[in-house]
Amino acid sequence: MNLINFNNEQKLIQGEIRKFATTELEPIADEIEKTGVFPNDIIKKLSELGLLSLIIPEKYDGVDMDTTSLCITVEELSKVCASIGVILVVNNCMVAFPLIKYGQESQKDYYLKKLSNGEIGAYICDPEIDIPGRKIETQALNKDYLISGNRDFVLNGEAANFFLMPISLSEGKSFCLFEKGIAGMNFIKPEILGIRTAGIVSAEFKETQLKNESFLISDDKGEEIQKEIRDYANICFSAISLGIAQSALSASIKYSKERIQFGRRICEFPMIQEMISEMKIKIEAARFLIYDAAFKCDNGQDYSLASQIARLHCGDTAVYSGLQAIQIHGGYGYIKDYPVERYFRDAKVLQVLDVTPHILKSDIAKELLK
Image (cartoon, rainbow, N blue to C red; front, side):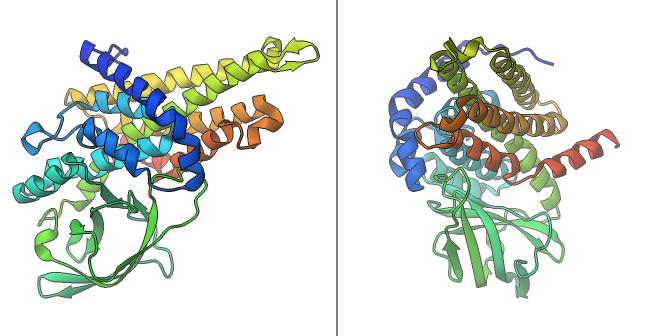
């Protein structure tokens, strides 16, 4: 395992993003979470810093940073607002990444430059199982396709200018790109437990026409691409969970030093000390797992298994830390005057977003049993 050793550029990025999160994001984090409105003003500022296009090559006006730098950025922002972390991960990992690897040159030049210029791209999640009444029906129309049905999770959908959608065709799974405002597509914004300001919506399709030239690939590589997208996104979703867990720990330490019970600060109680220690141990293990997976990715090594393990452990760690933080805060832990209830809600959503722990365990077993 590679020990975490950031280079000077990565340390500079960490410092600058931490400063931005503290000065620009922290004062408004609670308010935007309560309203659940997509944070366009903050996203504009992040775009000016190049964070919406952090992994996009300079050829397409991107910043061309490595995965480790992306994880650093996502972790620091997610310590303050996990929804912002999700927006960045979707733009970079689930939209830009497959375009960079598999897009036609014309698609890269058009869509990657859109991202680099501050536009939001959305990823329409493909459900793992067919849900009655929610399945997408596909009808061939010459070389084009008509689709009807529902997709329940469109990440970044509220503010997106274009969409990337996995879709099952007769010849296998493929990916389609299409613009905002396509005929026959409507959105519904659901009330969700956490990550409320990340712009997650549901989509309904009614005989929506997908043009043949808008598909990302023409041959049967869809399943391979979907796995690559998930493996890559798992690394950065893990960084969001790490940021949440770290904030839950920091809030717990601060509160335990201030809270007096039975004439003593509660941080002096062995039970509280044990809870804080367990949180720290899990968090440090999570950090090593994330940056080991990022190191493997940046150095051209196979990172699939590492990313799955990181996502599973980090998701569990964030939920555990959120619960412990609520327990340490007592009655104050579940009221909105303190942020720890938000940490727990966000952590729980992150634990199951796009892929569940049970699926991750199955994927890990498959890797081991090859």
